[in-house]
Image 1 (spheres, one colour):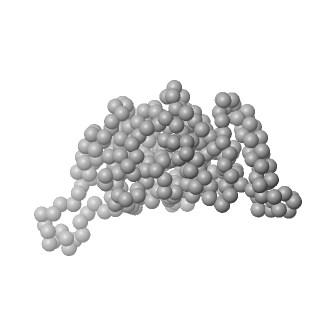
Image 2 (tube, one colour):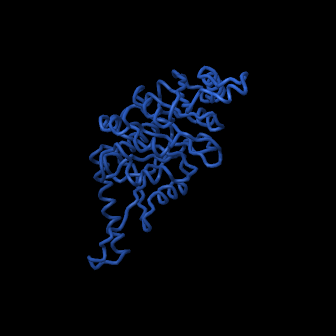
Image 3 (spheres, rainbow, N blue to C red):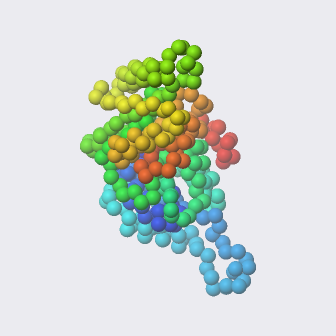
Length: 304
């Protein structure tokens, strides 16, 4: 596990900014972060020529005026009182591309983004950011007030699940936070060839999951009192199962790794993580990535 020392908060000059600053102030305290970047990317800071001619007194918002506006939001909404260095950055261009570049330039450990439902505003594409950014990601739903009493960690016993559990343990340490692990398992499509019924093979797969969990705990030297619940994915909707479980547990945060046991390297999200990112949920979601893995491929992919 690496320490999350540098947070990047993506702001878009909407009502969502106040919520993100409030949430991030508490998150930074729990993570003991040392530096927080607030970044806004404007597609164009200049007014169209025709508009400038027709309205000569109209002034385009400058990066200084935008930074001043964000500074006021930060000052009024940083409610935890946690002391760390805060930096405001205003950039121009494609929001997603600029944020991805800034993540690399400032060696960001985790990004915090809003998950909008009704609020207007756009430009930043969370799915694209989550898919290719070489940093962990925190997605905060619109209207969510910070509280952190229980964390649900989705695990499949891969190395990325190890990172997720480590991060959850680090957050919960000395903070009186309850951890609950969940494994969503499936019955393989060829089960009928074994002569077993679907329910019989589901019982077999659950038994394998229990064995995998015990091995997972031992090889990673995790606390023996960690408990895992097992949920059958009977309709190929793992995101539904994860969020339903977290909702039933009244979880305040879901933590999961970016990749599972199969697939390419963690440059891209795994299929389950990608489905979870786009899921319309009222529970904050943390996607934990292995920092810096495949950086060369990332740069080639994004043409940075």
